[in-house]
Length: 210
Image (cartoon, rainbow, N blue to C red):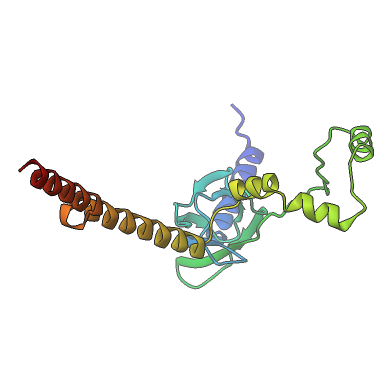
Protein backbone atom coordinates (compact mmCIF):
# COMPACT_ATOMS: atom_id res chain seq x y z
CA UNK A 1 0.00 0.00 0.00
CA UNK A 2 1.53 3.27 -1.13
CA UNK A 3 1.41 6.04 1.47
CA UNK A 4 0.25 9.42 0.09
CA UNK A 5 2.60 12.03 1.52
CA UNK A 6 1.00 14.74 -0.58
CA UNK A 7 -2.34 14.28 1.18
CA UNK A 8 -0.64 14.45 4.60
CA UNK A 9 1.11 17.68 3.63
CA UNK A 10 -2.13 19.33 2.46
CA UNK A 11 -3.96 18.23 5.61
CA UNK A 12 -1.20 19.59 7.83
CA UNK A 13 -1.27 22.90 5.98
CA UNK A 14 -5.04 23.23 6.43
CA UNK A 15 -4.92 22.40 10.14
CA UNK A 16 -2.08 24.81 10.80
CA UNK A 17 -3.89 27.57 8.96
CA UNK A 18 -7.08 26.94 10.88
CA UNK A 19 -5.18 26.97 14.18
CA UNK A 20 -3.54 30.28 13.38
CA UNK A 21 -6.91 31.70 12.23
CA UNK A 22 -8.51 30.61 15.49
CA UNK A 23 -5.76 32.23 17.49
CA UNK A 24 -6.18 35.50 15.60
CA UNK A 25 -9.97 35.53 16.14
CA UNK A 26 -10.02 36.09 19.87
CA UNK A 27 -13.21 35.15 21.71
CA UNK A 28 -14.80 37.76 23.96
CA UNK A 29 -18.05 38.55 25.78
CA UNK A 30 -19.86 41.23 23.79
CA UNK A 31 -22.48 43.23 25.71
CA UNK A 32 -24.29 46.49 25.23
CA UNK A 33 -27.55 48.35 24.86
CA UNK A 34 -29.42 49.41 21.72
CA UNK A 35 -30.85 52.92 21.75
CA UNK A 36 -32.26 55.48 19.33
CA UNK A 37 -30.27 58.35 17.86
CA UNK A 38 -33.09 60.88 18.34
CA UNK A 39 -34.27 60.43 21.94
CA UNK A 40 -31.79 57.97 23.43
CA UNK A 41 -34.60 55.59 24.41
CA UNK A 42 -33.84 51.86 24.32
CA UNK A 43 -34.89 49.82 21.29
CA UNK A 44 -36.38 46.65 22.71
CA UNK A 45 -36.26 43.21 21.09
CA UNK A 46 -33.66 44.14 18.47
CA UNK A 47 -32.47 41.19 16.37
CA UNK A 48 -28.68 40.77 16.28
CA UNK A 49 -27.25 38.50 13.55
CA UNK A 50 -23.60 37.44 13.45
CA UNK A 51 -22.89 37.46 9.73
CA UNK A 52 -19.32 36.19 10.29
CA UNK A 53 -20.27 33.10 12.28
CA UNK A 54 -23.00 30.97 10.69
CA UNK A 55 -25.56 33.83 10.89
CA UNK A 56 -26.25 33.08 14.53
CA UNK A 57 -29.05 35.30 15.77
CA UNK A 58 -29.57 36.86 19.17
CA UNK A 59 -32.20 39.21 20.56
CA UNK A 60 -32.04 42.13 22.95
CA UNK A 61 -34.50 42.26 25.83
CA UNK A 62 -37.29 44.79 26.25
CA UNK A 63 -34.82 47.38 27.56
CA UNK A 64 -32.46 46.95 24.59
CA UNK A 65 -29.78 45.05 26.55
CA UNK A 66 -27.87 42.14 24.96
CA UNK A 67 -24.89 39.94 25.85
CA UNK A 68 -23.37 36.97 23.98
CA UNK A 69 -20.06 35.41 22.99
CA UNK A 70 -18.47 36.56 19.72
CA UNK A 71 -15.09 36.85 17.99
CA UNK A 72 -12.94 39.85 17.31
CA UNK A 73 -13.63 41.02 13.76
CA UNK A 74 -17.15 39.57 13.56
CA UNK A 75 -19.68 41.63 11.62
CA UNK A 76 -22.97 42.00 13.50
CA UNK A 77 -26.21 43.12 11.88
CA UNK A 78 -28.76 44.95 14.05
CA UNK A 79 -32.34 45.03 12.75
CA UNK A 80 -35.57 46.29 14.26
CA UNK A 81 -38.94 47.34 12.89
CA UNK A 82 -38.98 51.09 12.23
CA UNK A 83 -35.18 51.51 12.27
CA UNK A 84 -32.47 51.41 9.66
CA UNK A 85 -30.29 48.28 9.54
CA UNK A 86 -26.95 48.81 11.31
CA UNK A 87 -23.75 46.77 10.94
CA UNK A 88 -21.08 46.74 13.63
CA UNK A 89 -17.61 45.13 13.45
CA UNK A 90 -16.21 44.00 16.80
CA UNK A 91 -12.84 45.71 17.29
CA UNK A 92 -9.74 44.15 18.79
CA UNK A 93 -9.37 45.24 22.41
CA UNK A 94 -7.39 44.36 25.47
CA UNK A 95 -9.20 41.86 27.63
CA UNK A 96 -12.04 39.47 26.93
CA UNK A 97 -15.04 41.74 27.58
CA UNK A 98 -16.48 44.53 25.45
CA UNK A 99 -19.44 46.76 26.32
CA UNK A 100 -20.77 49.41 23.96
CA UNK A 101 -23.87 51.37 23.02
CA UNK A 102 -25.43 50.67 19.63
CA UNK A 103 -27.23 53.74 18.29
CA UNK A 104 -29.87 53.06 15.64
CA UNK A 105 -31.49 55.63 13.37
CA UNK A 106 -35.24 55.91 13.01
CA UNK A 107 -36.53 54.82 9.64
CA UNK A 108 -38.56 57.70 8.19
CA UNK A 109 -40.71 56.92 5.17
CA UNK A 110 -42.14 59.93 3.38
CA UNK A 111 -45.49 59.27 1.75
CA UNK A 112 -46.69 61.22 -1.28
CA UNK A 113 -48.90 64.21 -0.55
CA UNK A 114 -52.61 63.44 -0.58
CA UNK A 115 -55.35 66.08 -0.57
CA UNK A 116 -58.59 64.72 0.91
CA UNK A 117 -61.91 65.91 -0.48
CA UNK A 118 -65.43 65.17 0.78
CA UNK A 119 -66.43 64.42 -2.80
CA UNK A 120 -65.73 61.25 -4.76
CA UNK A 121 -64.61 63.10 -7.88
CA UNK A 122 -63.96 66.55 -9.31
CA UNK A 123 -67.25 66.35 -11.21
CA UNK A 124 -69.22 65.96 -7.97
CA UNK A 125 -67.31 68.91 -6.49
CA UNK A 126 -68.20 71.07 -9.50
CA UNK A 127 -71.88 70.13 -9.20
CA UNK A 128 -71.92 70.92 -5.47
CA UNK A 129 -70.10 74.19 -6.04
CA UNK A 130 -72.49 75.30 -8.79
CA UNK A 131 -75.51 74.50 -6.59
CA UNK A 132 -74.07 76.38 -3.62
CA UNK A 133 -76.32 79.25 -2.56
CA UNK A 134 -74.22 82.26 -1.57
CA UNK A 135 -75.89 85.48 -0.52
CA UNK A 136 -74.26 88.64 -1.81
CA UNK A 137 -75.79 90.82 0.89
CA UNK A 138 -73.97 90.87 4.25
CA UNK A 139 -77.16 91.77 6.11
CA UNK A 140 -78.98 88.72 4.75
CA UNK A 141 -76.09 86.45 5.77
CA UNK A 142 -75.98 88.01 9.24
CA UNK A 143 -79.75 87.55 9.76
CA UNK A 144 -79.53 83.94 8.64
CA UNK A 145 -76.58 83.22 10.94
CA UNK A 146 -78.27 84.92 13.91
CA UNK A 147 -81.68 83.32 13.42
CA UNK A 148 -83.17 81.17 16.20
CA UNK A 149 -82.68 77.99 14.18
CA UNK A 150 -79.00 78.74 13.55
CA UNK A 151 -78.34 79.67 17.19
CA UNK A 152 -80.15 76.55 18.46
CA UNK A 153 -78.14 74.35 16.12
CA UNK A 154 -74.92 76.06 17.20
CA UNK A 155 -75.79 75.69 20.89
CA UNK A 156 -76.47 71.98 20.39
CA UNK A 157 -73.03 71.43 18.85
CA UNK A 158 -70.84 73.79 20.89
CA UNK A 159 -70.29 72.83 24.56
CA UNK A 160 -70.95 75.37 27.27
CA UNK A 161 -68.13 77.37 28.77
CA UNK A 162 -67.31 77.48 32.48
CA UNK A 163 -68.97 80.91 32.87
CA UNK A 164 -72.17 79.70 31.24
CA UNK A 165 -72.30 76.64 33.47
CA UNK A 166 -71.71 78.81 36.56
CA UNK A 167 -74.45 81.29 35.62
CA UNK A 168 -76.85 78.46 34.90
CA UNK A 169 -76.21 76.84 38.28
CA UNK A 170 -76.59 80.17 40.11
CA UNK A 171 -79.90 80.93 38.38
CA UNK A 172 -81.17 77.42 39.00
CA UNK A 173 -80.32 77.65 42.71
CA UNK A 174 -82.00 81.06 42.88
CA UNK A 175 -85.21 79.72 41.33
CA UNK A 176 -85.18 76.75 43.68
CA UNK A 177 -84.79 78.99 46.74
CA UNK A 178 -87.61 81.30 45.59
CA UNK A 179 -89.97 78.38 45.04
CA UNK A 180 -89.07 76.97 48.44
CA UNK A 181 -89.74 80.28 50.20
CA UNK A 182 -93.08 80.72 48.40
CA UNK A 183 -94.18 77.21 49.28
CA UNK A 184 -93.22 77.72 52.93
CA UNK A 185 -95.05 81.08 53.00
CA UNK A 186 -98.32 79.63 51.79
CA UNK A 187 -97.96 76.50 53.88
CA UNK A 188 -98.01 78.62 57.08
CA UNK A 189 -101.64 79.83 57.67
CA UNK A 190 -100.45 82.88 59.57
CA UNK A 191 -98.64 84.09 56.46
CA UNK A 192 -101.40 83.19 54.03
CA UNK A 193 -103.73 86.15 53.27
CA UNK A 194 -106.40 83.81 51.94
CA UNK A 195 -106.45 81.97 55.27
CA UNK A 196 -106.93 85.28 57.11
CA UNK A 197 -109.79 86.18 54.79
CA UNK A 198 -111.48 82.86 55.40
CA UNK A 199 -111.04 83.25 59.17
CA UNK A 200 -112.61 86.71 59.14
CA UNK A 201 -115.57 85.44 57.13
CA UNK A 202 -116.12 82.60 59.60
CA UNK A 203 -116.05 85.03 62.53
CA UNK A 204 -118.54 87.34 60.81
CA UNK A 205 -120.89 84.46 60.07
CA UNK A 206 -120.65 83.33 63.69
CA UNK A 207 -121.66 86.75 65.01
CA UNK A 208 -124.63 86.92 62.63
CA UNK A 209 -125.73 83.50 63.71
CA UNK A 210 -125.82 84.51 67.32
